[in-house]
Amino acid sequence: MFKKILIANRGEIALRIIRTCREMGIKTVAVYSTADKESLHVRFADEAVCIGPPPGKSSYLNIPNLIAAAEITNADAIHPGYGFLSENAEFSKVCQDYKIKFIGASPEMINAMGDKATAKATMKKAGVPTIPGSEGLLESVKEGLKIANKIKYPVILKATAGGGGRGMRIVNNDDEFQKAWDDARMEAGAAFGNDGLYLEKFVEEPRHIEIQIVGDQYGKVCHLSERDCSIQRRHQKLVEETPSPIVSQKLREKMGEAAIKGAKSIKYEGAGTIEFLVDKNGDFYFMEMNTRIQVEHPITEEVTNFDLIKEQIKVAAGIPISGKNYFPEFHSMECRINAEDPANGFRPSPGKITNLNIPGGHGVRVDTHIYAGYTIPPNYDSMVAKLIVSARTREEVIVRMKRALQEFVIEGVKTTIPFHIKLMDDPQFQSGKFTTKFLESFDFSSL
Image 1 (tube, one colour):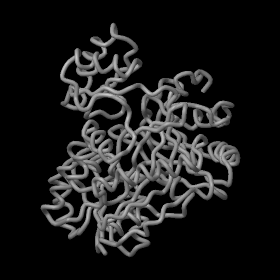
Image 2: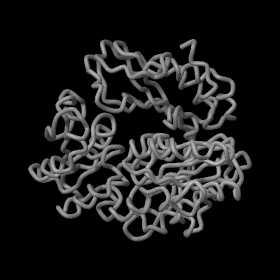
Image 3: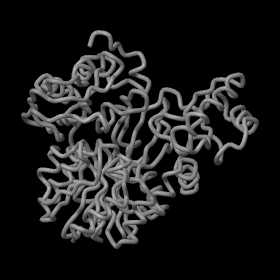
């Protein structure tokens, strides 16, 4: 087992990792930018090293500084959390070169799954259902038009290096194709330095369902069931829940088996998710794989009584997994609390928290790094807390979530709490019958 783990991240996920390490008797090293000097993860780690100024590229994305911090503190492993360098093949490789264990996927696994066109081809070969579309990257508009007419409109153009909805365009007919192609390529090139596009059938009335998997160094893979991540705004998740209201036990088992098959095909090691789109007929298609821990992992932990961070560390240390598949015993839901103003287009709202009350009670968990007097920096993602609520049924979870949200007081900045309260009262949300497009028609005016 590792003696000391450096956490190459910040905020709530860094604090989450520190807590598990402390329970396991492992020393921790926090890294921080000058903007994060007063963050709780810095305060609670055994050691802390400043790695640069506020911009991410100068600190949390600065590989030489992270390796130097690991070397001067004698850390024998690095946990990247999520975001930043968690799916960076170069960072994983540099850790290997310096004989520091990267608690995540190998460079080969990241490369196999990081490029979406390659990932789709890999999954198709493994027998995992994939969305009909181009075999790889499109070489021309002419090729795209030919495939679109073969699989029938609507189709979607996607950037191979994409993320966050950038470099994506829905096309409904031949006349729209050229403009969509030009726009998507321009956006992808600017955002990712790679304007490669591929094409897929556009799945109508989709649900975004992901399967949590864990694989060990001995070829064994298990799944921990699904999470429904369909409540999204501009492809950014806002609410996640498990089990999904639309997934039957039969579909759950089929998707779990497909996810395991896909993970085994690349000899996957560590925690990860295989993400699927489920259409209105209950057919599911591979979308992408995330080779890291997810923001929403706590809801899986709550319904399976399983510490995913501990499992990541154990797997990285060479300890075999049980091989057992886990299914939800309760219902759990997570609301992402962001420092944003939902009444004004979710405009970021950094600043000083003047007053804070964190909710509690049976079935309520809050993962956060904020406190009264803490200043939220403008340099990073706006998520400041995750409110996780669990109960025996979905109906009970919604009632409890609303109560917890009403107790959650964050003053001094705007937050998404008012949006979440309104969502819990929405009849369509309560029914469980919604798609990833649900928030496009949601009324934000009364927030």
